[in-house]
Structures are given as structure tokens and as C-alpha cells.
Length: 196
Image (cartoon, rainbow, N blue to C red):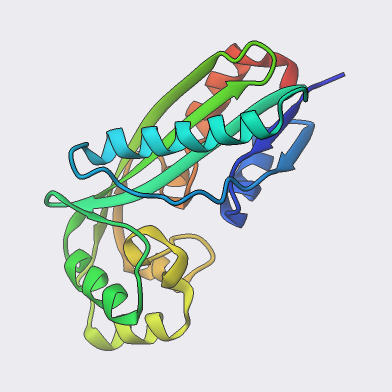
């Protein structure tokens, strides 16, 4: 019988992406941990550290179960500034004005922990996204929908008006959504083939 992949995330976007992997048994166990960035680390180091922290936290809570725990964390960075989830509408507007007409990088850290062996694997995927110039009216109308408030960088690219802001993507599209499914699939086929 195949083992279970436990997703340490409350993101509905990540849950839908995990289902693309073709894994038979998936369960969602949100980590609900504070996502504090360490200013001494790079954005890539931060998302990998946070993904590992989430995966380890849930693996401890699920001690005795059979399967793998998947943790992930995504952030947006531009010109040395990290744009996490906005704190309010003013913060969201500031972020979108900053991204307008510019190229930023979306970093997603991914970590998996085997519940039996306690072995871990992790990686970071980076994707460059270029926005077209945005008007302040577009930005404010988008913020009024409430959609930017739970997203790093204050925008979403899938099933969301934020998609019309994007002029170009260099790298994994699904990484921008929240989970680099191609690289994750390759890792899991090698590290935990009994999930499939």
C-alpha cells in the first residue's frame, strides 16, 4: 500500500498543486507556525529554512505515522527587498507599486521529511517574473478584491486578476503559484517512490 504525503501547509493553492503529482494518498496538516524572516539570511536561505521548520514541526506531531511530510515557503524579492504577505491595504499598494514595470524573483523553499527514517531533503526554486507598468487605479481595484492580502508580494498569478500584471516569466510557472511541481516530482520519485 502506498504511504501518505502529509502537506504542512494551509494554502489551498499548494494542496491543489500537490494533487498534480499523481500521489495516491494526501493529507493536509497545516504547520501554523510564525513565518519570521531572518534578516541575516538571503531570501533563498530563508525560504529553505522555513520549509524545513514546517516539515520538521509536522513530522514531530505525526510521530508513529507512515509517510512523508512536505513543507514549503514562498517569498518575493526585488532589489534586495523581501516582500512577504502584506500587513494591510497600504502595504499591498506599496508592494505592487514597487513591482510595477520591474522584474522580481519568486523563491520557494521545499523540504520533505521521511517519518520512518527521519531523513530529509530540501531545495529552493527561483523564478523571475516581470510586471508590465501598472496604473494606481489597477492596483487599488485589485487590492479592493482582498485577493492580495494572503500572498507574498501582494499578488497571485493563477485564477486571479493579478495574472494580467505579468508580462514575462523565466522559470517554473508553478513555483510562482506556490510549489515547483516538476522538481518536487523528481525528488519524490527518487526519495519516496512508494508514495506513488
